[in-house]
Length: 263
Image (cartoon, rainbow, N blue to C red; front, top):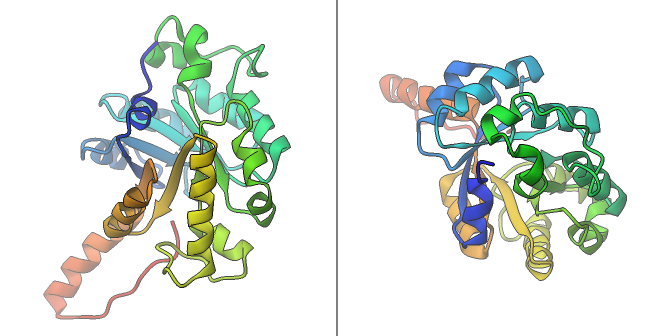
C-alpha cells in the first residue's frame, strides 16, 4: 500500500503544511496541488463541496505527491467510509466531544476486528494499491477535532482512545464554546489561546499528533514553534480573495484592509 506521507513526516518530527479546499472545482484543486503543500484537505463541512465534487478533486490531487485528506461534515460513518473508499488518505472529524464519539469515529475508519468499516474501497485500491485492505487501518490518518465545551473537559479520554492518531483544533468553534468571538490566530491574552496550549500539552502527554487551523503563515509558524505537527493556513477561497483584493487595492490606492473570521 502507498505510504501515508503525512503520517511519516509527523513521526519523524517534520511539520506538515496543509492546504484547505472549499471551492468545488478540479481546476482550483489542481492549482493548489501544484504549489508545494504536503497535504490538501477537502472541506466537506463548511465548504461548498459534496461527494460528487470531492471525487474528481481527489483524482486531481492524486496526479501529484500531495496527500489527499478530507474534513467530513459530521461524525457519520456512511460519509466517512464513502470518502475513504474514494481514495482519501485521512479524515478530520468535527465535534468529537467524548470517548464514545472518538471510538465511533476511528472505528468507522478501520476494518474489523479493529473497527466496523465495510469493505469496498473502489478507488482506494487504485490510489493505495492492491494490498490496501491489509494496511489501511494503519495508514489512514484519523484526526479528531477538539472544539466543543465537553471535549475540553474530556481531553485525555478522547486522546487516549485507541486508533486516534491526533487532534485538530478548530479555533473558531473552540472560541464560541468558551464564550469568545469566533476567529483564528487567537491573541495570547485570550482564553482561547490558553486552551489551545492546554490541548497541545495533553496531545504531547498522550503521544499523539496535534494540528490547528490558522489564518496566516506567521501564526502557523508560531504554532509549529510551540509544538504543533500539522498546520493549515487559510483556504483556497481566502487566498483567491486576498490576492485579488491586494491587486485591486494597489491599483485603486486603497489602504483599507479587512480580516476574515471564516475558513
